[in-house]
Amino acid sequence: MPAVVQSIRSRHDQRDLARIASAARLAQSRYDSLTLITAQLGQVASFAGARPLSTVLLSEIARVLPESSAVQNITIDSVGTGLLTVVGPHSDAILDALQRVPDVSGVHVLGPIVSDKLSASSLDRVATQFTVLEGSTAR
Image (tube, rainbow, N blue to C red; front, side, top):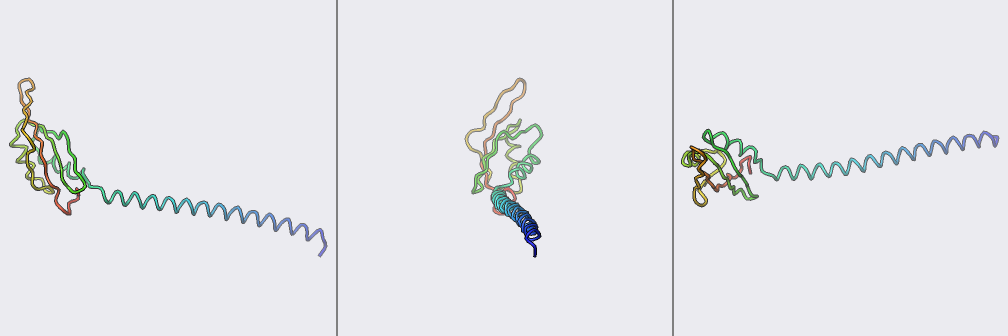
């Protein structure tokens, strides 16, 4: 084989090898990115699965509360103990309604019921504690 043909083939082969090496680096980079993203998505899924769906419980509470009542504060800890402050015109109606929330038990008042006098009407502020039932979507 003449030296010129061999030289041309050699340069052609080197260009092909360079293209293959570039494609391999790109494929490895994409693979590494996918591996990292997959790990991060796994962490997000794990975190989301461990968090309570407080919005479900909040909607259940809002549904049972009497008209003119409002949730002022709600917190639920990791063991399912909830603290809830509700403001409304009648504390007895608020407490009765909270007893009917499907995913909670043991609703009881924390401290005194405070009446806030606003113009002609009075609003009661009721701080309660409850337990989210085991197996609830809110836990």
